[in-house]
Image (cartoon, rainbow over all chains, first blue to last red):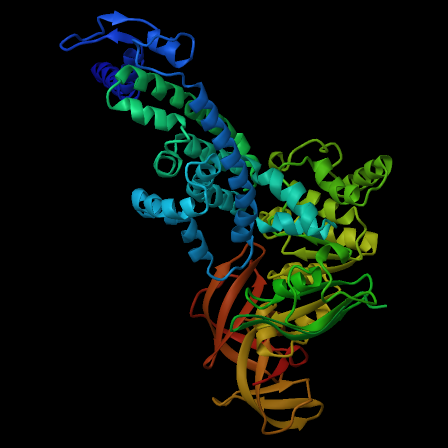
Length: 275
Length: 353
């Protein structure tokens, strides 16, 4: 009996700790986003309200509240992320197929090539990219930012898609060929449906990466292209309330996509990916 | 008319020659088995016929057509894989119908042919199941139906039973053989299991290091192996090294270096030649009393034995030579026991040393 009792307490404490680690910072964010007045040493805000939310969502315009409408940045973020994801996946899928199936020389080097933007310190890369982009007239343009996002995202696009294709036994393709399917028909009717869950996960990673991309956008895009992370950056130094609003807004797509990924990766689904 | 013809087919992987100048004709409606140890080139050869592998040199014909460079989908073949290779996102029905749909046949005809194929492999009623809901044996039947539904010119089977448990494997051997006979289809079967090969085949091609060591009916391969490799690979076999002494009244007299004299019915050897005597278990008669035979009778000792149920597997020693024999389980034996051993001259096989 005694042992059981201890166990329950132990479990409860564990759950509480995990909950605190996950929800602690989140609740602080939520609190800050509705705090109108919150001075030390008060534990909770002295005055709460939705003024910052209203201002950020463009529902009110009050010069006393240091927040701007986030709609333009939001739109810019979504458009850039969608286009970047689309192009990244269009490039990634054939590249991943080739990497997964064909006997290519230097395959490892090729895969490492996509890893490059991630292994080197980000700032020097983009600082060096800036003059090149300026020469091409891409600096400070949406196209330039999309291009930078694609560079950063290709890693997830190619690597995850490659493993999605690799997980499919080659005999499934050969079986299709043996009953009369051309290479093209095999790709579309056997390989793509089977790789789809993996490719979706890959696309979700790419989308989230683009939505939250900071460094590249900072060097290439500013001051003309403002995405949500840019707004967050400029607010984060002095304006906790506005920064918190932005952080929550940025969190929403990530959480949604995480849930989606989790659904795609349900065991039954994985079972169908072809052991 | 020969259905499949391989002419000097060679395939290398780096420094390894998987298939080495292989020439072979597979007759119409014949079931031919490639048998050999792993790495002998049997699967690569089969994959060359299927078109999954393009040989470095040589030619492959299916019917009169040179298909050496034809892609697999234009070869009119059926292929059954070791791991079944059913498409997990399609039902049994969709798996079998896939090839028919690619050929744009009318819906009703597809339906009839799929049901006919399911009936053939005795899986009627499982149309709407997904492959993961089927047992291994059922999955392999679906794979077989998927290949047969297209009425291919050649059915290629790559160790189709080796993922199944022993009992099912034995059942399905007969089933596949029965189907092949019933449908009068030309088939090439790859296996490393000698008993599977013996049961299934019209002819067996024993492969070793990318070459055919022997080609013949199961009886020929078992009773007249051409060398030590074949004799070891198929069935139990013991060997005694000896030298040919002379021909004597329709027999050949051979002698071992430790002085054993043996008479063999086979006479296509010359005196002085060094040879190896291959001895199948059926050639050995063991008795506790001295036998009536005047020749080929020796005193030997039982070294050890293993009880196998219906019979006993036994290691004997004559002089310095080890012999392996099987006899009915009933006999009571003790290790170290002395027995009389008779080697039947008409069942001994002389092989090149």
